[in-house]
Length: 113
Image 1 (spheres, helix red, strand yellow):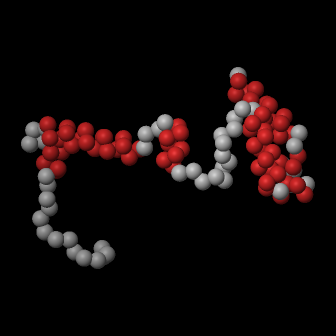
Image 2: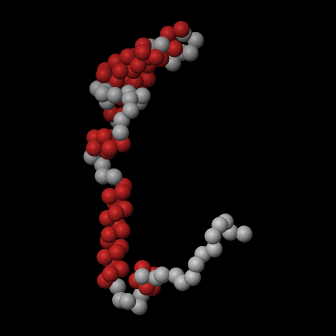
Image 3: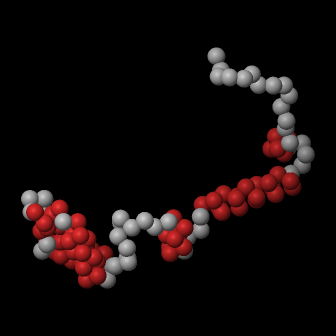
């Protein structure tokens, strides 16, 4: 309900400011004016992120701001658990055999023909 109301307020706010969307106006090409307008609309809706989409933000900063853990940590944790699982297996199980498998022979050099 609140999101719908916020969307309606945003639409009404933008409709009042044609230089944001009307390409026929000379002020449409004024990027600074449009940026200031969008910032004022965001401030009026209390949704000011403090930066624009043109600001360069590092992924680490965004992840920290959103309190998210990097995917790499999840993958490393999964791999560690899998290795521990393999070490607990009996030695005749195929996954454990494949862990220690070393092929014989040599591969031919170059591209396959």
